[in-house]
Length: 255
Image 1 (spheres, one colour):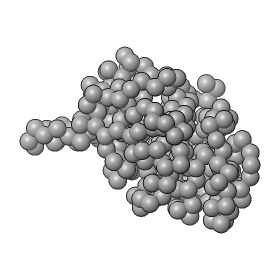
Image 2: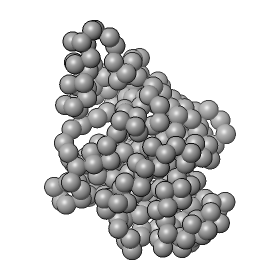
Image 3: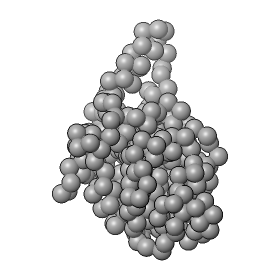
Image 4: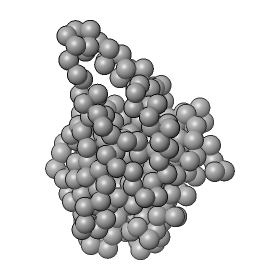
């Protein structure tokens, strides 16, 4: 990749069920292949169920819940689509607050398909130029957005960079825009704290670009200093299995 995202952490926020798999895995791969670190955030620990349109697809392990996640630890946010996915997220105040925090902090947000529903709930699209799946158009306009029918829209008119696309057919342009406009902390992209997180899934989805050797190493040991310390503290205080360890048990890596 021409743009180096090394040192950058990107949150992928999804509901426990309903995310469109391609809209999760292809941007995930684009961030990873550019040297960035994608992190799977959801409203519940354990596994999320992805879909290929209306059909169940693969499951992926959650790195951290949105309740526990600090937006300051990330340089950017990606909101994949799928009808049920943002429909659930927009009913969760913690997910809405998490999404809104990236706008308030001036950090890039990339959203595709039905994903903007969460941003409507966060009152984050007023005055912004954006695209989406056609059925979300009226909701966005009613929320004060300037909706357009384009493959990818990069809007810098607000407090942050807002990247949007309409559908899975637009993923090539969507991923390219993410890699172009997300910046690591050393380039002034954010004031995040350090640390590293990984993601897992119960199966290896075709085309997701998983690296099994890396998965085996990282499942065995958490790379985030803060979360590793939390695991050690939990074990020393009674030997109980932590939520992080339980969520990872038996899971392969999205990478």
